[in-house]
Image 1: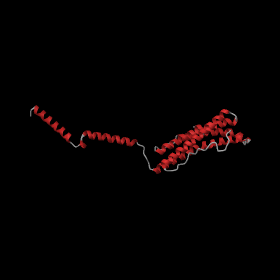
Image 2 (image 1 turned 135 degrees about the vertical axis):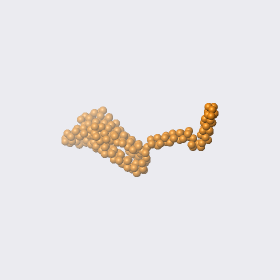
Image 3 (image 1 turned 135 degrees about the horizontal axis):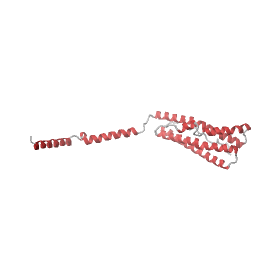
Length: 222
């Protein structure tokens, strides 16, 4: 066979192959298969990045665990700030005994430490991990708000109360204390609103954040 005939045959084979490829069903064509493969890979990637949603019972259990840890961690600070406000109320009412006056500075110093990041419980509170669910996001807000309540509002209030223990007429401390009391109330309300929102998502009733109303209703604050 001559060279020209051989080339002609090759050209014919190539043409026939191309014709067969173009005549193949759409679902067997290379372009379609490549595109389909890319779509499958993309779908797998997107699905793997989506948050994993457990059962409702599991979400409720996780929420209860988070709130149990929140309340356990904030409890020492909650007690401390109540104690400091109680001491101040007794001071304003003139009911502090000599023994109380002697013990109060050390008690308030310990109360201050209980609401700072130097306390292990507060450090643990600020590092609580929450679920990635919709309810978990609201629980994350609770954790952040309760941490702020302790390390800013309560800590600042106790600092003011310590100042007023030795300088009862300090105008700056009185003014700042009034601001701290408003912040304590505002953050408490925000935390309660967030836990209520989580309750609605889960159709459950999770434990409320253990942050008390401060000062106690009816207690004088100077």
